[in-house]
Amino acid sequence: MIGVDEAGRGPVLGPLVVAGVRADDDTMASLTSWGVKDSKLLSPKRRAELAEKIRDACEVHTVVFPAPDIDAERCHHSLNAIERRLFGDVILMFDDVTDVIVVDCCDTMEERFGSLLAKEVGKEIVSRHGADRAFPVVAAASIIAKTVRDHEMACLSEGAVARWGIPTGSGYPSDPATVRFLEAFGPQDDLPPFVRKSWKTVTRRGQLTLDAYDE
Image (cartoon, rainbow, N blue to C red; front, side, top):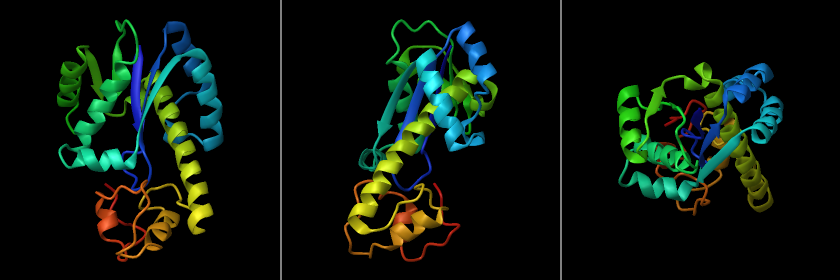
């Protein structure tokens, strides 16, 4: 079985990361015994530990889609369409795919998302809401995607501290550190390239609150 999931759909900073994990029956049993589950239910330390185990036991592929590319694509496509294409890119990285492919559906309609993705990759797709909680291999993909994005954000934040003296936070508009980072730039300032300029949060800089709009 191949599981596919993403991390970083909603943040205003940093990349969107999509991960795919392939596991056979024996490895699937190992994933369960290790306590692999939806990455949001795990601490950063536990995610990192499990990510290492998953990479050792499974075939893993990732796509890191940076903020400027997200902005460029959003001129022509919805976020769902962008994510669907990235899911397809990851699926096609696996050779000789005869596996069951399960994806965590971002669309409100599971069947629509699965059908469109199936046409793009030429493979049968099982598309489910909450697949990262129902399928260990999708949970494994969510852990890989989250750890990759966390690493990317840590590097971006380190660079932001070195250049502007302020960390980025997690990149989510609900994060006070991220709000402070965005408000450090005036309306006429050039925003860093890792800011998703097409997000409504950015157009409302200076009026942000801690419950700011999260796309």
